[in-house]
Amino acid sequence: MRPGIDNALAPLEFILRVTIGLVALAALGWLSYFGLSGSSVLHGGESVCVTAPVRAMTGTSTGQHLDGVHALGSGNMLRNGAHATATSVELCDDTPSGRQRAWSLVSDASPLCYTAGFLCLAWRLTRSARRRGLFSPHLALSIGHLGLYVLLGALVAGLLRAWADDHLMLSMAATHHTQTWLFFFHYSWAVLFAGFGLLTVGRVMAQSVRMQREIDTTV
Image (tube, rainbow, N blue to C red; front, side, top):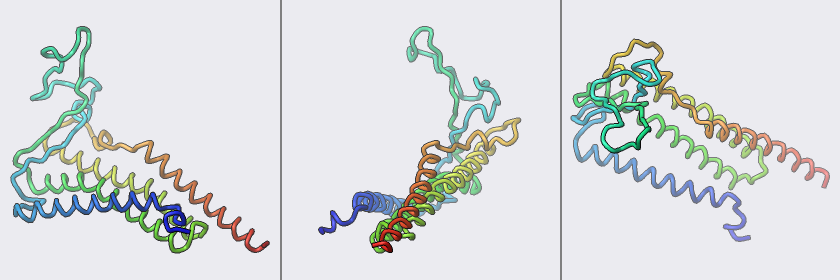
């Protein structure tokens, strides 16, 4: 058979190559920017910003008066009878400290590291399928490991980002609440279904491997 027909995972390998190439180019451009500008991740003159839920600072669903926050119904933006309420606010510090820059770096890097890890594991999965075949216990185990990474990795990345954003908010605004990081934590239902879906596919593949071996022994 031709390679394009023989390899059932060719579409997945193609999109992985394209995605990894784009990520590598973006990382190279990011490093080149800091190298040419002579700035550092933890030092520099750029401001640090974080988008914080208003409830994390006020504790109410409608919010309270904050400095610099005005009603959204001014002018001709809204039709008669309509009203708008701001549920989040962007806080920025034009003279951030090194600690604030570190928190901003953790917040920005956590989803990127999670995505990079997923791409690496998915690439290893396609390599294992090409070397050992689709009906192999190694492939079934790799799919299960990928499902666990999708679930647990998203949890860790979400907690890290919530922790970093919460510290950034507390460094710029005061609040009378505790455990405010809970307002920043989000876990996607799509990630939940994708992770358990991969775990299910891995178990189905493991059963298929056993059935294939039984068929081979009877034949």
